[in-house]
Image (tube, rainbow, N blue to C red; front, top):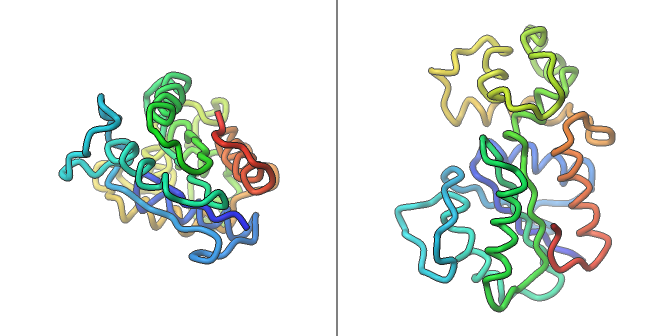
Length: 214
């Protein structure tokens, strides 16, 4: 049985990831997976073998050390890393993540790297029906008519749709939106390409023995 150790940027990512694993895959928290939120995105360290700065608690700050710490895990474990692209080049970020993994010895368990383009809020923006069910008064007409997962400032756009001032929103607001919208996301045929890629990647991890997904 595969067990997933899932690393995300922060608490606002947890509801959507948990919903996917429980509703779409029928997994149970602690029995089949654990989700580990961090203090934001952070930056990949120049030396992946160095001890991380304890003051830097972002996902990327801690990633090399976390991967090293997981090297003792047995083969039934998989590590899933979900990071926001933000304004980074997606291909370059993915390449950097793979390079970090390859630089760490021993490599440890299977690893899946997935990038939310541009943020996990993009998954919600792409599913207007889910937003309207969770928030009947939402003004989804404010969502720009652009391709799904476009770089539009997704969380700020979602805040505006929900009648919130982005300048006054904090992490707990984003977590609340995710908690309310995630149960209504279409996980069988998602509009967001990065959400589909995340779901497809998890499905492959649970069914085959990839060492690292690129």
